[in-house]
Length: 154
Image (cartoon, rainbow, N blue to C red; front, side, top):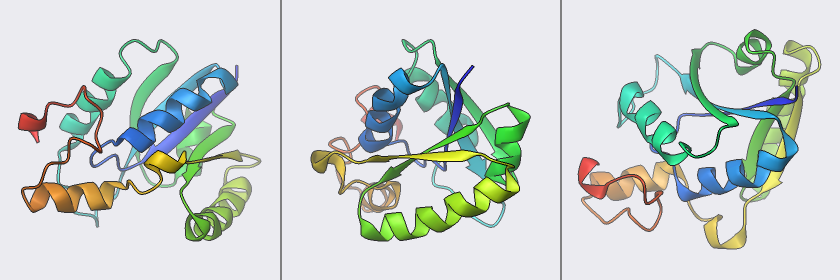
């Protein structure tokens, strides 16, 4: 079984994240959207809220699961028997960063392969960081988040 982990904070999940998962579905038997928990990081939304949103967004996709983990992504991949990591690339700086991380994950994860998908142009400007700033500033984040997420819950 080909299992991929798509790790991230998903604080909140964006249309860019959803697009990547949907485009990757034909490549894998199962994709685990895995929320990484970093005790040093301050999140805008609770873990429970993020899990609920991801489950709602992918409720019709039987091959998508939601998970969460602390520690190294590569160790989580080994725990869930995933041989692949799924990552999105928006620009050249994403590539430079992700290339290094993928090489380290390959060593630490004993052969885990990272699969990169390039963001579609119409979504490449979206990041959770920017969406959080819009939300904090009381702006309208609806163009950037999946329609399954009710704007009044944000």
